[in-house]
Length: 144
Image 1 (cartoon, rainbow, N blue to C red):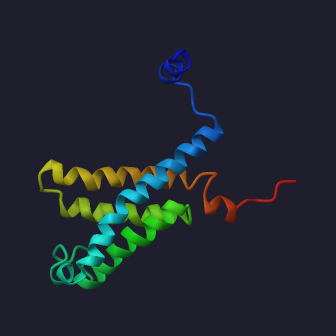
Image 2: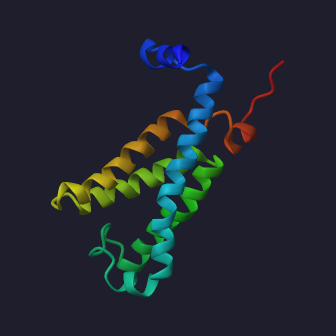
């Protein structure tokens, strides 16, 4: 109990291993929380393709929907695995920026979710995939 209280109140930074585990958990959480939104769009593709949020980026409703599904499914899966984590987080952040713009004049309860995701993905852009990611394995430099 004393160690837990010390950890909570001492404001000491995590060790490298602790930070890497935290990034792993955060990355998996962020991808897993977005994935159901993309799956729902795949399941209801016909309905969404008729009127996908008034063509949010001006390229047509179906192409916008396809890009949205790509971000919410493919990039979420990539983020969960730590595969091209920063590019996946950039695409997801852009996706949430568009969603925030679309919901800007809605009630805060509606606007807050895309803003929250936007903040999460911006943090992951800065942090990257961490030590426990495919990125780390792919781009590991040989240390001599």
